[in-house]
Image (tube, rainbow, N blue to C red; front, side, top):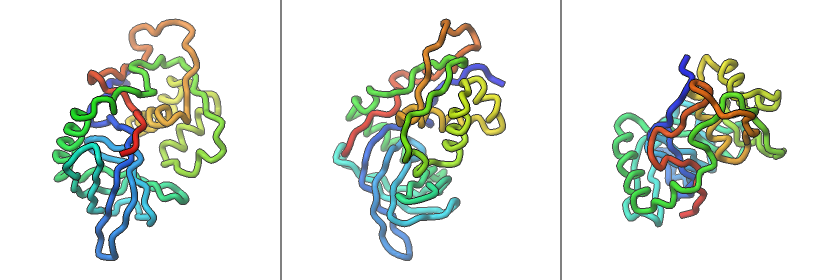
Amino acid sequence: MQDGIRSSRQSLRIRLRCEATIVEATGTYRGETIDIGPSGCRLALPTRWPIGAVLDARISSVLIARPLTLRATVVWVSPATPWTHGLAYRPGSVSEGGRWFDALTSANPELLSHGRVPDRIDLDQRLVVAPDEDLGRELATYEAEVLHHARQGATVRELRARLAGDWSASKRALLGLIDRGALSLDQAGEPAGPGGALDLSGQPGAARGARHRS
């Protein structure tokens, strides 16, 4: 197993509320993004779609003139209202999603400047859960699993060992929870040596989690 993880452009997300319209045979549904990246987004909608549903979406922001039109697959849904959906862009839409995201962040570089997630995380840092009683209402499956272990006092190293079966998805959930302020990290006792940290600095300027409303 790799001791270090590098962030990638594909996993980068920024907090940005954009208008979102879903057009289906049953009607038109309007919602908004919670966060968005080059290959997926988190979307709040008035109707619940099942995992695996393929949606045609139009996303627009006042920060960029051109809207993003795409097709995406629902990969997770919150267990209760408000219905929060995790969308992964379909292969035919990933390139367009990446171009739109690049244009958005190039025109508004401040969107990338205020992340909560550090470039490196010491594997022996302990996870601390924020005292938020309503946190579980919008959790995806992997987020709920990460929080379960965090409540048991797991370190990042222990979390990685327990969720090794699907660490890629669990790592994204971990970073997303840190970004949202649902999790924090205690202070490492000693500087991490080789193999003792998650290296998240793969892309220059890849800070996560700026909070903006379009």
